[in-house]
Image (cartoon, rainbow, N blue to C red; front, side):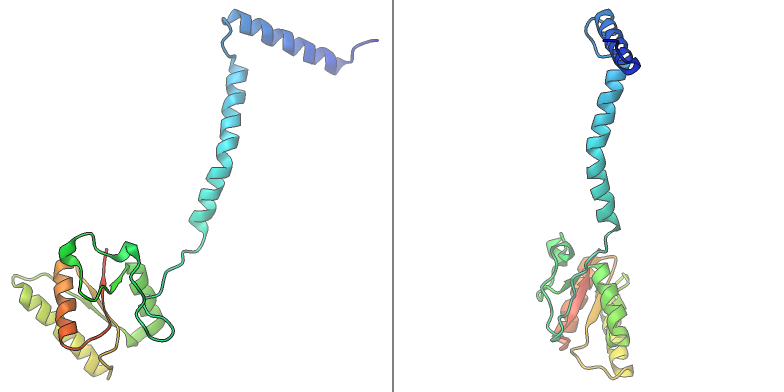
Length: 176
């Protein structure tokens, strides 16, 4: 029986591969190394595809306040690492949660940024006056959510404590 051209080509390729392996002392040829590299890349492709899909997937942002108006527990990522920046009420918000609340509630949320001053007490008082002013202008109750931001989380926490002492019940420290 006469061998087909494809069978001859396969035999020739096999002989060539055997000769190359013998010449290299049994080491892998470039062709085999390329084949292994391609196999590894193919194995990594599904993992990379999953990572890309996760990166493109919409992010779920847990709400700060539920539909009944109750404050939700703080997400672990929102809790400050610095114990001195933690608040008694443990109402924390990530920047994404704060932005979501502002977008949903609009003027029914009071944002305040506490700027560092020479006197921390003066910074807390100024932030408190700004919150009170917004509350009065928009005729909002003391249950209005307040979002306290600051580059100094300890200063922001002091502001949260001061606002709570004045009767504000839903004050959130926006962490970094």
